[in-house]
Length: 152
Image (cartoon, rainbow, N blue to C red; front, side, top):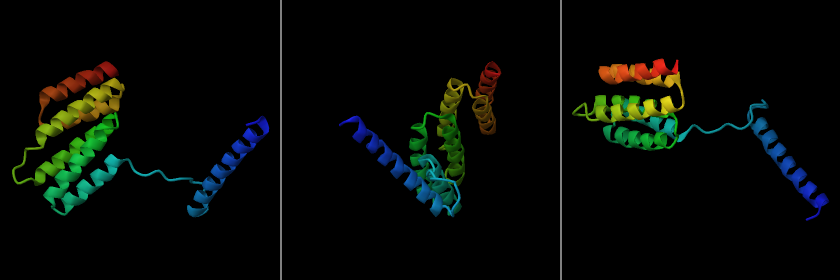
């Protein structure tokens, strides 16, 4: 391929990209918003968990919660884990025998703490400390507060 034909190829690709972006702007009511990215999978799954909880569908809530957990674990971020652990407690409250998901929520919060510390996220560590306090785990909350003090 010579230099001239290579340059035409780049121009064609850039033109196609500009056309797609222009069309997306047109479909967005003429605004310059551009393309809308879909929600992360863990967010979609948590929305389904909340719908199932609202409908008192225990089986669906547990299923969607497990799916949300798998998606959150794949993100390598602390926030999805905190959100999924919070959802575990909402699902746990509707179980015939509450308490079964509390231990899992604690483990997930602990994983979130490790991620937040590794990412040097003071906000993440503080959210995990608050979550441990809500669980009544004073020892884990104190540990998270010590980690927060190290980060600040």
